[in-house]
Amino acid sequence: QSVLTQPPSTSGTPGQRVTISCSGSSSSIGSNTVNWYQQLPGTAPKLLIYRNNQRPSGVPDRFSGSKSGTSASLAISGLQSEDEADYYCAAWDDSLNGVVFGGGTKLTVL
Amino acid sequence: EVQLVESGGGLVQRGGSLRLSCAGSGFTFSDYWMSWVRQAPGKGLEWVANINQDGSEKYYVASVKGRFTMSRDNAKNSLYLQMNSLRAEDTAVYYCARWGYYYFGMDGWGQGTTVTVSS
Image (cartoon, rainbow over all chains, first blue to last red):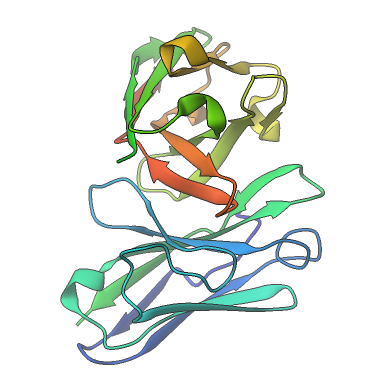
């Protein structure tokens, strides 16, 4: 059971917009910023969004993040086949004194 | 470019020990916190531990406290994870990652090394 809660799967067609939710607590998302990681099949994770809504250099602006209270979300617009991957949210948890991840959401591009 | 290369994984019996290593290059290793993250087969990511720049501060996930020890050698640009009293549930791919202070998260990852604990 992960500390942050994500839907296990979602899907969309090319060009569509999808969102992935991430629910936490006052000691995690409620007190700290949220990062999102993308893990393509068979590869290591990659930082996709940091500090709730910032994109590292090289990440397309089709990816965006937001946070409100103890929840966060990742939006992917103009869905492409290469976006098919697992997506994880993460945040520091002040009560656990460590990083907590969501269980991951598998995105399928139909 | 951040490069992190893990090594030391393998097959070990339950109760045994293993030491993972991670060699960093392409950045000033001693300037960064570092992390270990693991992923059990078919499962999600789980943070294991963080260490600060000089090794004086360490944080561990509850399930490994007292069994795993994270350390570093800045002269060798290397990170380590000493794993003792291994359990079947420690079976996973272990990733070394750079903790970017500006990003407040892992901004560079190795390719991972596989640890299998046989029961």
